[in-house]
Image (cartoon, rainbow, N blue to C red; front, side, top):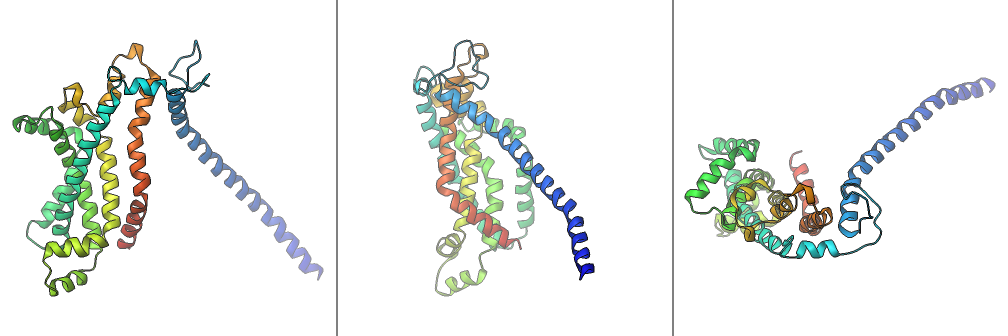
Length: 298
């Protein structure tokens, strides 16, 4: 009996260092995560404080500070047509990006279905060509795209920017759509064909409803990608009345000696709001699409 108690006691003493080491390791992990979270949140805290707060006297607006009071004056300056003109830029962005996303989804739905279901000679070459377009940096294709838009008389037009944004979103969205269409059983389409449906009818009535989470996820990612694009509108647009929100934000930084950080951060919050709202309402499709894609790859 005593021998058994001694063995148990020795086991407990041997387990104590391991237990303490596990606790230290866990504390270190949480401390590292906390540092990363603080490092990521400080810029957002400064952005919100600068946009809504009144800067104390003799304090640089470039640094984080405790505001003396809260105000919406910076948003008023952002909306003012003589200052930020953010309302016009917001409408231009919504129209342009919305058209680009709709065009990209329609094109990629048809092309993704074709690459998923049909077998033809150049199929592999097209797929790898699209993948190559995804790898090439967007800035490397700006000049050829600019020359094409110039020849088509689409420079300094929102239509030209929408077409350009569509071309940048198509490669990634196309691969996503093809993957989700691959996960839809072919037997369901064959049953629809036997009932007299055409390929397009089977696509819109069978395949797309079953791949709806993937379509929703592709729409969210295409919107965020097009909404955050800065270089293409900057190159193609020269009329201030046609500027998008990224250019409105950039214009507030042009004169670096007199930057109004409050107005700049107010524009930044307005710029981020549509993307956050779109993600909030479409997050279920993004999560379901990610889960469906993971299950399809197993």
